[in-house]
Amino acid sequence: MSDHHHNVLLLGFTDPADCRRAYEDAMHLPGLRQVAVLERDAEGIVDIPESHIRGAGVPTVGSGLVGGLVGLLGGPIGVLLGFAAGAAIGNAAEQTEMTDGGAGLIVLSSRVDSGRALLVVDLVEHHAEPADELAAKYGAPVERISAEQFAEQVRIAKEKALEG
Image 1 (cartoon, helix red, strand yellow):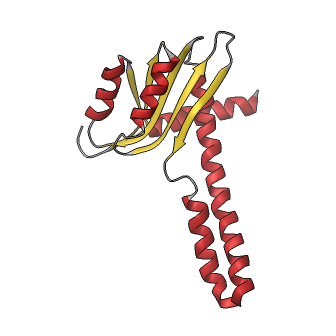
Image 2 (image 1 turned 90 degrees about the vertical axis):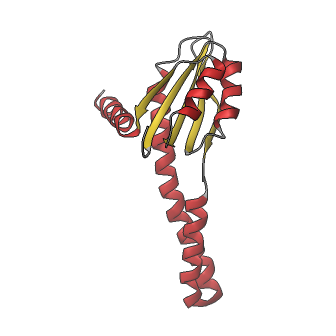
């Protein structure tokens, strides 16, 4: 793999405990953006016992700080109001991203059979080897979907949900 590729990797597991162990290892993959474990129990209930978003909270705090700096022009009350307004704007942006991420996990839940688990890894890969080594370590098949293709799948699923 040359340059870099933004991919969503899906690693299937027959044993949810192995998936959770792989989740811990996946946290150290270079270029990691997000990682989550999807599990379906014997009754068909889907659970997300583990998830991580790299940099979560940064937009909220960063926007708050910028708002606070702008608020310096208005004095102490301006700093407080500026920080609050900036944080609210940053948080709104983060919530939109989290909603899209949740929709992606809902789309993927159909790929998880009862008693099995799926490790979902969103990362920018410069080389395929680290993720391939992780999959090999756990004997898990790995499927790569480009982030653009995955986003399109999620968009189509959202449209269908709104129609129905």
